[in-house]
Structures are given as structure tokens and as C-alpha cells.
Image 1 (cartoon, rainbow, N blue to C red):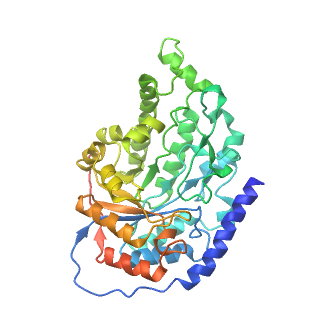
Image 2 (cartoon, helix red, strand yellow; image 1 turned 90 degrees about the vertical axis):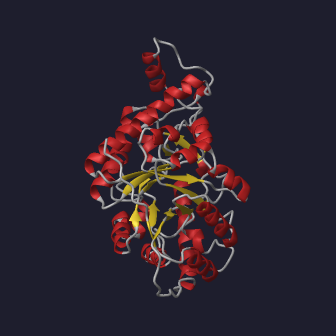
Image 3 (spheres, rainbow, N blue to C red; image 1 turned 30 degrees about the horizontal axis):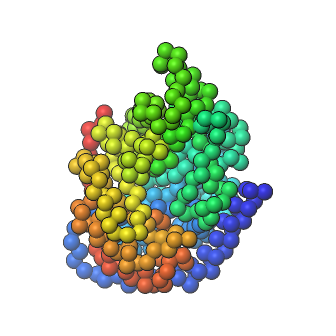
Length: 412
């Protein structure tokens, strides 16, 4: 019942997109001029929730053409969401029984969507970095959770889900937001996530992969049988502290996640040495305190090639405060750091003037670019202004083409 309802929501979004995008598809006239050479990351996330771009027959091609036309240079297409892959995955099929997300497969006639994105993107000189959005999250009704309950972690008193309010979700109070969590300390879970990532890097001409704020563990979790036994093994039989915020207990779990990223990086670089590991987290304080995600340490250990910090703030003062935090400024001295800017969601539209201001703040603060969350709100049906007005403004913001920063690090 839940699965059918979810598919119905996507179908309705698809039908609405068909109608609106048919009207709002006019191109913006581009001027031919001697353009200055600019270096700047200009990205956008392509997601499957509250968006028809991956499901409308012409959606992907139109999106890529429009993004290239308006001088974007990077796309982060979702490839892992709600327990499904958004590419043809033998790894996922062997574990869950599904080779790809069923409705996506149906709407695209069995075509490999990621292959299509990569092929079209490369023709337009777009950098393609697949986005493993869900990380270790999975819905309670997913095949992954149903077939592998031993892979799940939980909190004290058996609590095994979190309310994950994803920005693109239509209803933040929906049952869809109740997510279970795969145990990032469990070796079989680690192998599964590693195999998914390596499968993408090996089989597609991608420029890297991206994990985000879900590549971690909610601080209240880790009281499952496997993790407790592992902790006891390494602590002379002592059980984990009952306080999930105990500093040693937090550090122990966070270090295990860091070790997994170290392993992922090592294996990925063997296959494709120049492939980037992009991380898109929340602020360091929040990420570590609530999700045991120590990205500041990851940067220090040279585990990350690109940081795209999520700063979805409405007012400029709080936006500036976030990007000026010490962890962010420290990362900026080591690797390319860009800022994730909200271009709006279905329930929280953002006016184009606000978007323009955020971009200027990022540029004035000498960051190496920005990425917009998400495609549908750039100039689509959920924007407060007309698509034509939004596109004209984006063309002014991104007047000249830009290349991504070249960043080489010795392979370790």
C-alpha cells in the first residue's frame, strides 16, 4: 500500500511536469562574446523525489541541454535512494532482488538512466559525479530491510528508526520520512556500500562519487547486538555507555566510519585514480554531534577531494556565519570547497533575488563555487517566478562559461 502510494505521488508529479515543462521549455538567447576564463564549480543535484526529470521521457536530455546552455559545469545525479539504485546494478540485484528502481525502469523502458546521463553530460562537457543520497538509510518497507534485518542498527530500548526530513520531500510529517539505518560498522553492510560505489566507478565514465550527510550513523544508534559485541571486544568486555553522547563512545563509532571511507577511497583510486570523492555534509558541529560524521578529520586525512557544504539558510547573516566557521575555512585551504545553496523546494520556494545574493556572498568569500538544490526549483514549476524570468537571471549570474578547479593530490 505504501509503495503504491509513493509511486502514485511520483506519477502525479510526472504528469504535472509534462504539462508545465512543455510550456516552460523556451531557450534563452545566448550572446557570442570573448569570454574571460573563469574557474568555478557550478553544480546542481538531480533527484527523484518531487521531481520528474528522471521519469519524463525527455527530462534528462532537456535538463542537460539547459544546464549546459546556462553555463553550469557539474551535475550530481542521484544513484542510491530509498533502497534502490538508479542505474542497472548487479550488486543491488544480488542483495535486494531489484536491478534498479522499478518505476524508473518502467518509465525509461529499461534504459540505464545513469548511462544516459553520463553520455549526454559528457557531450556537453559536464562533470558527472553520481550522488549516493541515502547513504546508510533505507525505508522500513524496502527489500533491503526486509531481507537483511541483521544489517540494521538501533538505539537503546530497541528504537530502530529516525525521522529523516529530506528537503525535497513533499510532506515532512509523512510516514515516508521514518527511515531505518544500515549499520556502517557491520562488515557486510560495508561491503555492500563499497561494492555499489565501485560498480559505478568501474562501469561508468564518471568523474567521481558523492556521499552526503547520510554517510554516518545517528548518534542514538549503535546499540544493536553486533555493535555492542564489537565494542566489548575492543574494551575488555565493557558495554557501551548508556549515554549516546559520551565522548569516547562517539569517537569510537565516528572512527569506524572514517575507516570505512579510507577503505572506499583506497579501492576506488585503484580503479580510477583521478576519480573524486565528493562529500556534501552539514556543518561540522552538527554532522559530528548528531550523525558521527567527522568530515573535518576526513579532510585532514586527505580522504576527500571536494567538499560541497550544505548551507540551506534563508537569511544572509546565518548563511555567512555558516561558511565562516573554522572547519570550513580550514578545509578551503586544502581542497576545493563549494557551497550548497537552496534554490527552493515544493513546500519552501526561494525567490531568485535570494539565490542571486547567496551566489554573490559565496563569490565574495572566495569559495570555489556552488551547487544548487535542486534541479526542479532552478526554473521549474515550483519556482515563485516564471521559468523565463528565472532563466534570464541565471544567465546573468553565470554569464560566462567556467571550468572546474584543477586539483591534483598524490595518490596514497
